[in-house]
Image (cartoon, rainbow over the protein chains, first blue to last red):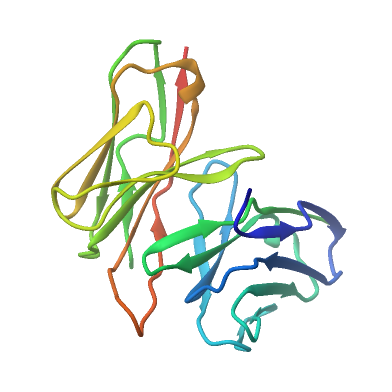
Length: 110
Length: 116
C-alpha cells in the first residue's frame, strides 16, 4: 500500500491545455516535494511546500499544500511539449524519511 | 549547483557477479539514500545512511548491502546479482535537519543495471 496516492497515473493532452495532478494521503507530512523526471534520468526537484495552505508558483506551474498537510496538487497552465515527463510527489514523514507517490506520466502533444 | 553523481549510467552484469554502485555528493549532506525504480512500483527505498558508518534498512534491503566510509560517498553492493535486480538505481542526498525545519532530497542521474 502506497502512503501517497497520485492521480491520474497517465495524462495525455494537447499543447495549450491546463491540467492538475493530485497527491493524497491520510498521513501528515512535515514537507512535500514535487519532482519531474525525464526518461533515463534522475528526478529533478521542482519545489518544496512546507506550510498548510501554502501556494507556490514556478512560471506556469502552481503547487498547493493542503491545509492539513496531507495532500498537494500541481496545476500546469497552458502546457507545453517541454512539460512532458514523469511527475513525482514525495512527503517527508518523521523527519528525514521520504515516501514517494507512484508518479503521473504526462505527455503533451504538439 | 547541487551535485549528486553516480559512477555509471548503464551497467550490464551476469547472474552471480558482485556489483558495486557508487554515489558521490558535493553538498556536505549528512543523509544519503539508495532507491530502485521499477515501472508501476515507483521508488522504493533500499538503504539509507544518516552519518558516516551508519546505515538503516529501507523497505527492500534483501540482496543488498551498503557502505559509507566517507561523508560524501555511499556505495550500494549487490553481493550476488540476480535477474530480479535489473532496475534503475537512484542515489539521493539531503541535509539532516530536525524538528522545526524540513529536508529536501537531491537525486543523481541514475544507473540502469541489467543482470543477464
